[in-house]
Image (cartoon, rainbow, N blue to C red; front, side, top):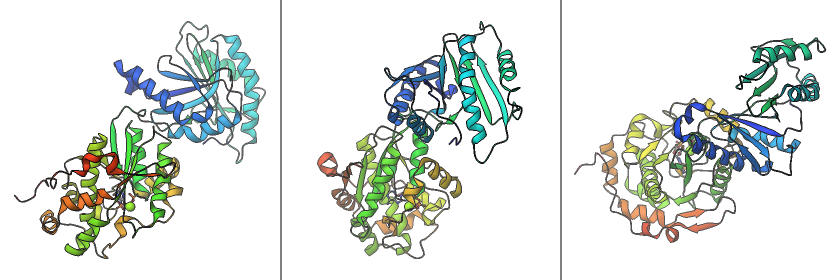
Length: 438
Ligand code: ATP
Ligand code: MG
């Protein structure tokens, strides 16, 4: 987040996106999804009027509002990072593309920007650059001539400002197009990736930890719409667990049109596993139930894949052999966007998207219920299937779903899942397990 930029009465936002993603006929769709995401996530700025010149989106405050307020700029500087598909955004001045008007805007606003820059603490190296992009080649001055012109105008009066074209701290940007010019002094990074709604629907297994919310965000950054499923073990896990998950969902839903949350009580399966299976296998067996149940819900929600926050080798359930045994419980695609991340990178991302402060609050998770002291780190699928032979998987799945509810993460109201989705009451036979002995 920029720390020193002043609050100028900017009349537009210039939104940059990754043009490579928009080649061909999808461009309009892509731009519309991005505009929709911008309006939703930056809703606090009021209604926006979008314009779509080639390769850019301009967002203007809707009339009668003519300029963004300081509160709007604070919100933009805080929330732009959450907009999937947005590479960066600059608040600035949309002008008519003539030299007189550009000159006037620079003379009027540069002194304020410069004063704010000088006042910033800790002070930055006083380096200046102007970057010009001139797509209208009929404009009387070239980019270089424009840059030289303004350096000659601005620098002599400010002897401490040194021209540094590569690493300048104070950067003035100008785009000159056929129908408009745009002057700005600030670039705010977006989330990058692809806009919401362009990547299909997935169902994420969301726990209260650090990893799974970041995994959800990474899927949203690829344009996916994410619904959420969480497993608790009430009364062994406290109500505070669901409160925490709802807080995470609300935070994650700031980036997308509201994703649904379903909470499933895993306890019936966990009790049977505790009583009939080897204790060292518990975590893997729990996870296999989670995937089975999630796969049924995914079908119901028309999600094409499950998403987890698994990270290779992080804990016993996330070794390759154990993940393979867990995966074998279902045939649905399971995506693990954090598989290769370093924990520190995940934590930094969690901080960046605002989930860290929520995840850090302690709340016991389902996986800790009856957790063994020495979980197996390399299970054999045959041994797992042998354990499961003593369980009535379909009945246990049904018992878990009987306690499932859809939760409105805003109001915390709960609705009986099977009342909303009654066909799941009539579950299929035990799902086929690839690799299971005939
Ligand atoms: P986090 O909980 O954020 O993922 P973690 O290191 O605690 O981090 P694990 O507990 O091993 O990871 O879980 C791995 C993945 O399994 C989670 O990222 C999540 O996708 C899924 N998972 C684990 N526990 C639950 C749960 N109670 N409800 C839903 N999904 C869960
Ligand atoms: Mg966890």
